[in-house]
Image (cartoon, rainbow, N blue to C red; front, side):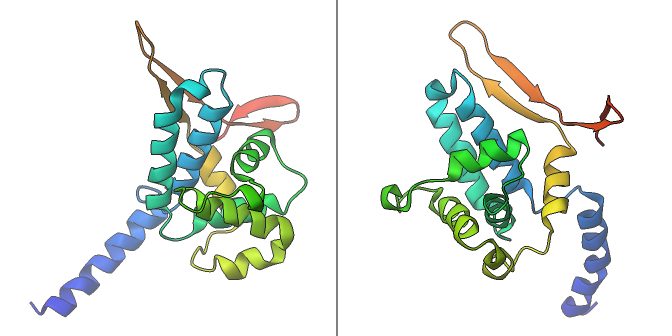
Length: 173
């Protein structure tokens, strides 16, 4: 078989995997949220190495710019949920204090773009084809775990988003 034709045999499989959620480009958003949640906890200051790992991992995963677009769009919005406020607070930095050697500098810039001109987010981060609603749904459709290393034992925290419907909580799937 001709090598060029073999590629086209795998395209339908790749499309199925992407649509199934088994392979997802928005994992950077989950890593950014993991870093934000960990930073906000009372023990967060003791987990600097782990937070840095989450952020470096988010940076590597953000090849499609969806993490940056997510932050940009949220930063330009005043009506945010608690978790969205948390992630924006984590990556909003005064431009005069921005560390341009940090692995999060692109995420910090994304929040600045969103705060100054939210209409620009779609153009600046055009590699990401996901909408804000899709990215929010991806983040909240799965649980998120944080491992905490202790002196005598380790723990894991698991965050699960639920959707409120008519005053009752229903697990979001």
